[in-house]
Length: 334
Image (cartoon, rainbow, N blue to C red):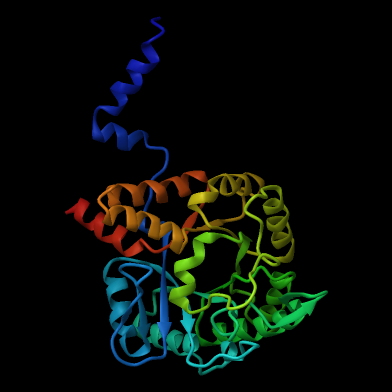
């Protein structure tokens, strides 16, 4: 047999689009994507997010239009981020039963009862200092008070679920948060509600546009004491293992595009636990900016990156391209 035969065979298999589809190892589907939206209590028009082209801060008064568009595109699941009118040092508005997310949930359940709704459970958008919990001084260093934060997160999660959240996604990387939230939900009769844990969340530069969009950037200090060092890989395994033991139903790696190796390692370590990856605002904006300059083909680049995240091991992806992917898929099938 000629030593060049394998190469010839591969070329032969690639030459026809039907054959390429038949042998494709990874297929990206719209059902793999969760659309992220930002909701404000303001009235009036949608406010464009300058740092995230094509995305808006959506007032409650316009939420019905947004949800109808999402459903019309065939999108099945969303995650909500709320931007409240008032903030304080403890983020107490986060568990207000008449808060922004709670009101949004009630409205969505009326408009689109079949839409699957996940809610972010964290305090950074609700605190006046932008950290993920009340602050304290630890040996001269500013840090989040872990146990006080757990108490507030429990109240927030329970309030979300009572309002109609079908999955909570605690994102603060607070020690012990999964076990506390699981017990809170179980004790209140919500044992059927799954927890999607931001198990592996790095202290990353890729969150900048989100911080501007959600109005939740840290105003003092930084979050490196409770988020992970980007240089560490083995630590990701330990964080995920702890969340599995505490009762997490789904694990997450964030960011995604720049942490494909971590996604792969976590999936290999926990093949029977669903894995989510979060393609962040910064990763989204890099593609957007390059495409607006005419340096890359946006559609090809976005689909390639999202497919690579799924190929690495993610079962589904929270991202900011879901609407555009839905439109591209509709165009391709027309």
